[in-house]
Image 1 (cartoon, rainbow, N blue to C red):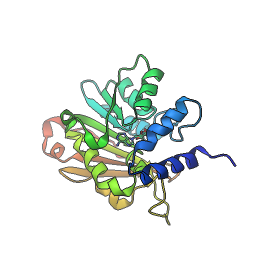
Image 2: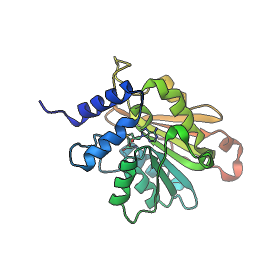
Image 3: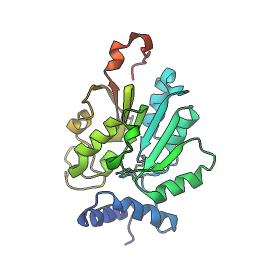
Length: 234
Ligand SMILES: C[S@@+](CC[C@H](N)C(=O)[O-])C[C@H]1O[C@@H](n2cnc3c(N)ncnc32)[C@H](O)[C@@H]1O
């Protein structure tokens, strides 16, 4: 029986982990996809619906002119392209050079600044530099052994008064904690983004109940009445 795209990803991840790297398998997969030998299982062909929904619900904030956004683990780039279309000055990065090569080729006229970068070795100038951080399924694509480091690295990108969206799949009721990818986040792991003056403001689920979107904000926003943001409850 031939491998599905999900089982191929799981096999490549297992081999990568056995060799001591939680992330090397992404480059292997994107390289195989470039040769037509694999599919990218997470390529939805469109922005994530829970990101698109949030941007509609927060139309005031979604007009991104002069605001910065970043998409860690950008993959096919659909979320980054949506943010750039809304005039966010958008940076999107991925650890896989082939992923970045592919996304640049797919969007030759893009306004997005696509970079090869590792979440675990971020450029220092990105610390606290982004008004909107959009994390979609990247942390859950890494094993729990690196979860705390990945969570802290994502959090470090959020600017004062900035927003972090964490979007992922809901953990099954009876999960095998070691089986993945994906290694979906527990409720406690979602809440763990709320540290260093970032606070969890909302946790919403998609209509199918299989996906969630957590919204965090730097608490300094609450003290800043001159730039208070009007929010529509989700
Ligand atoms: C499950 S995919 C999600 C891609 C994209 N966010 C989406 O929703 O379509 C995870 C992505 O994170 C990237 N990635 C994994 N580890 C990374 C790291 N340490 N630094 C940056 N990107 C990483 C992978 O190459 C892959 O493109």
